[in-house]
Image (cartoon, rainbow, N blue to C red; front, side):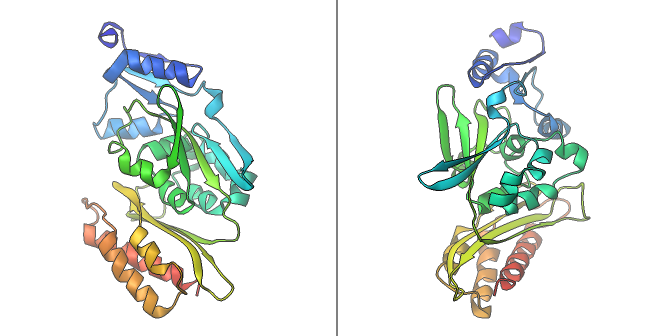
Amino acid sequence: MLGEMLSPAVWFPKSLEEAWGMRQRLGSHACFIAAGTLLQIEWEKGRVDPGHLINLEGIDEIKGVSREVMSGRSVVRIGALTTLGSLLSSSLVLQHSPLVTEAVRGIAAPAVRNRATIGGNVASGIGDAIPALLAADALVSTFDGSTRLTKPLWRWLQEKDNGQITSSEIVAQIELPESGTADYFYRKIGRREAFIPSVVTIAGCCMRKEDGTITHIRLAAGGGETPPQRLQFSERLLQGMSIQDAVLEDVYRNVLEEFQPVSDAFASTYYRKQIAANVIASELAKFA
């Protein structure tokens, strides 16, 4: 193969098409990279050791934040190469999806946020921004070599290959619908306040009528090595209801059953389940 004949190198495509072509030629010997923070984590875990790096930073079409109105609905589009730090200073993101702004503020240290990209956070499959994006009904746009494919983030996560960054798919863009006057929450629970992987990361978004009836609800949980999940059964339990103690007790029990975290040396599966259930019930109670 061509990849076996070439010496290890960093490649700098100027378009998605060129990046795709390089990946096809180099095969399993190459992976995509932007800021490199995700790749560093993968290296430290011994999961990936590519011979070639295809650096996407020169592709301008997947940078920046913009707003478009489609069929009367406002959508904020975030290029995958947009840094987490620049999202914090984006008035568009703050105005249309303050939940995402709050989530990004709690990720890593400022120096990391100024390098790390939203695309890398999503491509990892376990990024702490993902629960907030799921609660915000985000869409993800990817490039498959010929066309852009856009689908709900929660569905894309279900289909992706366990967070491997050597995939031939390129994350190109994140789309956020306008959240309006929704109530929201984001909680990142860790062994200390910052700079370590979370034990559990929780996000929620809720819209209600004047009488308190829930018209829209999204709940998501992840953390550590746990792929973030939308808690759709718990959402359905709350849809059309008002937030009362009896309902929250049902939600607590349902989250315990529905959330499927992984255990590690620091926290068991059941411990993570308990934290998620407690936090979600507590946060929803504030909306009562």
